Amino acid sequence: MKPTSYSDRGMVEPTYRGSASVAREVDLMARIANGDRKAFEELYNLYHRRMARFLTRLTHRFDLAEEVINDTFWVVWRKARDFRGDSQPSTWILGIAYRKARNALRSSARFGRQNLEAESLALTSDEPFRTEELRDWLEQALEQLPVEQRLGVELCYELGYSCEEIATIMGCPVNTVKTRLFHARAKLQKLLPQLAGAGVPAPHGAGRQAAQERQS
Image (cartoon, rainbow, N blue to C red; front, top):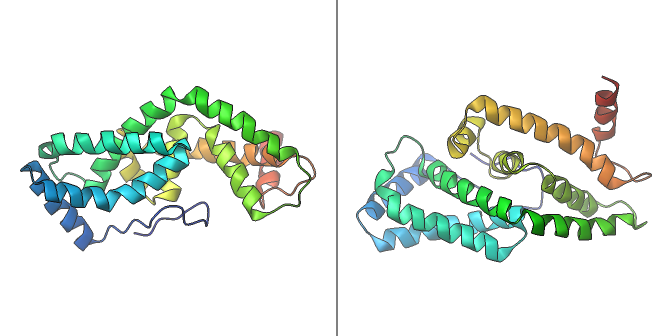
């Protein structure tokens, strides 16, 4: 399955979860459960780049992203025997990373708000509208979402996971995932025109949708 990204920057390595790839990861997990360090190293290398980009987008801090990755794989090493194959290895591993990232984001919330305030000052410039600006607005809008909604958006649109897989990762009902994504999209539709500011083109359709919501 190839992820559907909400941006075209290619910031995240494509997630290919074909049968051969899944079978290989299941084999690695079995070997790790038996204390195979080479298998652990291979699995770490398979996931590090993907997770580093995903987590860096969320935290904007390389040190925090690396901390979450290390904490995640420490759990993988210790708990590999608990993996029963009820889900794909990637779903199980991302479930661990999700809980670690959620805690890390909550603990660094003040740091994130300070960064957001500083970055927002740049939006007062009169430079012509560019695609890069839209991406910057999107990043800032995402930072204003609650942690669960933001992580859900990243897992869905950046890493390409289905609602069912995200529910497994987050440990919640599928309908909860759908509700979080619905509210996240609604908030983004309202936030993006606000970040763009008066007189600057908003994403196609976003302003019209926001106006319809205000009238309803």
